[in-house]
Image: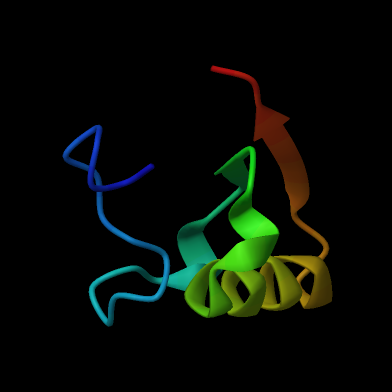
Length: 54
């Protein structure tokens, strides 16, 4: 999703997890190892996770 929207991928060193408040995922995220890692990290920080439908 980040690539499509010119955003910063959550696995990027540029993203500061301490400033994140929400994680948005596209359908099928569970098939991408980097996205699975992002969701796992987001869950461990207690962030809200929203799956977007396209």
